[in-house]
Image 1 (cartoon, rainbow, N blue to C red):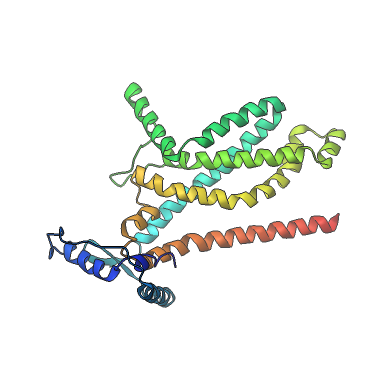
Image 2 (cartoon, rainbow, N blue to C red; image 1 turned 180 degrees about the vertical axis):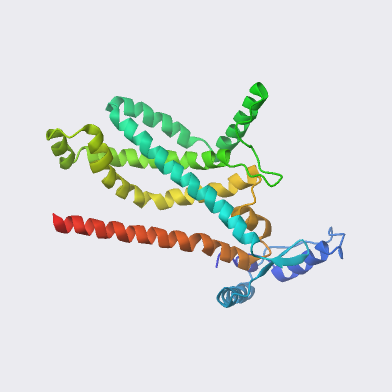
Length: 295
């Protein structure tokens, strides 16, 4: 339904015909052309039916670009692998960084924790575009001062910027994960089993890394879907600024005239993550039920 939306609001049939004429140099003067927003339910329903048939029949083997139809694969697959590698890599870094920061923060007194919370609140408040541009300008400034290029600030000549985009994409998710983990740890800190463990003389780090860690991670999982969507939303902006040929840019460039491709791309993102989150949730519920049964 989302992928076919252009057919609901625009006269896509005539627009595609005009676009093909422009790409094939059959039409050069476009000043007389104009289009208005319409509400074409019939065309929308027809496109929905067509998209469903294409997806289930597996007949969508090409897409339209620059006046011709070209094979959809492996172009879509390469773009998908590039985007998912950046996304998954940044989320893994975010989780690891947030865990380390949370453990370090929990060692400090509560007053010091308040200062750290304020600092990370300021970082969380920064706009995403500002963070990306600031990081790029920082690398350029260091290069101008020292002739040392730390990372590629953009992609080009078949070379992709790797370190800087992954770092930037992991920055805000790290802050959110850190915030949720710290709240979970502070809630767990007041529970009886922690007080009992301290009374038995168990080491503070052991309590943090073993007993409190398991419960805090279960609590974090309930917020992780929102964090994943945040990183996914930032991925489009990241690919635009760094000129990366990932899945988001592929959809951005070709999605308006290839709505079936947009639908397939959304399924390629949604289905694996849905299966992953559902499986983890099932495992957590099973583990929780076992613990409650044991108690």
